[in-house]
Amino acid sequence: MDALFEQPHTADVTHPERTRDAGSNVGELNYTSPPAEKITVKCMLQMRGGSRGILDEGAVYPIDAIMYTTDERVRVDDLVEPQTPDTIKDFRYLITSVQFKDDVDGAGRHLACSLTRSQRT
Image 1 (cartoon, rainbow, N blue to C red):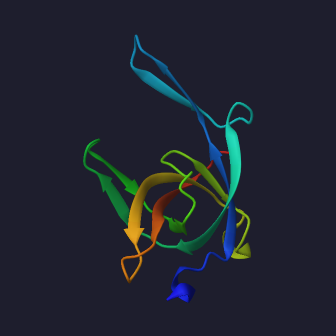
Image 2: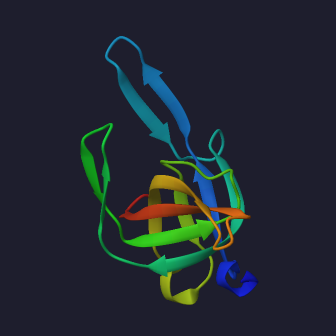
C-alpha cells in the first residue's frame, strides 16, 4: 500500500500575505516574498480536468491538476510551482480546495488539493 501514496514530486508553495479592508469588505492576496512565505513540499502531481463547486461561496472553479501531499501546511489560495515532474514544471497553479483523505486501510491521512492554472508569477 505504501507505493500508492509515494510522493516522488516536489513543488514550491507560496502562502500569500492576506489583507482585508474591513470598510469595503475587500480582501487582497500578496504573493511577493517577503512577506509571503515560500515552502517546498513533497507531493504527487497529476494533470486532470473537471470542476469543483464550493457550496459555501456558490462558486465553481475549474480543476486543471490534483496535488496529493502529506504536508499539512498547504491551504486554499496558495500558489503552487511544480519543480518535478518536468512535464508540468513550467505551469503555476492556485489551490482552490484542500480535502483530508484516509488511506485505503483508514490509517494514514493525506491531502488532496484541487489546482487551477494561474498566470501569476
